[in-house]
Length: 251
Ligand code: GDP
Ligand code: MN
Ligand code: MN
Image (tube, rainbow, N blue to C red):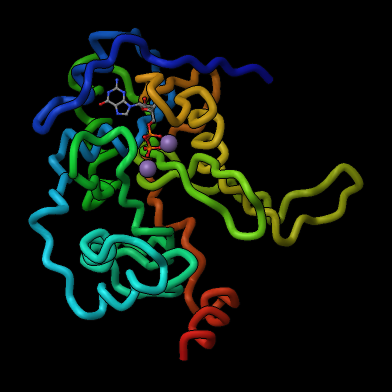
């Protein structure tokens, strides 16, 4: 098997209202079923998901958490405003977002963001991916998959990696269950999180700093599918022993 991956060069600093699909299509030639991987940072900037820390009024709950984890109360408030449940208050703030994803600080970023602003994740990352995908189709006539990524920490391991936060035109998982291994044994649990794997590799090319390369194109993998949604990656609550353990800690 062979696939190629490259960053799209000369992408400007993204501003509210920018058309990400147009910016990509003007800078690279896309082929049918390419996978276009975009950092959530630039999608959020284009959607004006910015909040100024100075305009946030921290509640008592936010102030309490801030005392424990050392964050600014206003930053904690911004995280709480994006969350439906707090799973851990310190040493870091782990929440379940309105979108159903469990992550630190609700994915809110201060790096690669100007001034005293914080940048929220896109409100509905699958919808953002869908819009960029449709825009790219209108501009190029090519059907591509879109994955919006963020850099996340991981449980049990040091070292952050890319993670998919919104998808369109690709399934989240590749299910091997029911197929055979080399020796004819039926696979019972293997259900591969392919969009996270792709996000990891794309993140490696994007970097975390001042590279200015928020878009990666992967060519040569046939993964196009209209039916994917990111929530397929989220472990159902009733099967999530770690979430249960965290809840019992705070109870
Ligand atoms: P995140 O992983 O989505 O939180 O994004 P990062 O802050 O890690 O940035 C990923 C890549 O996108 C890095 O190479 C940044 O330099 C780049 N980047 C972030 N914002 C912009 C922007 O507005 N324009 C350009 N050209 N690159 C950006
Ligand atoms: Mn981020
Ligand atoms: Mn990153």
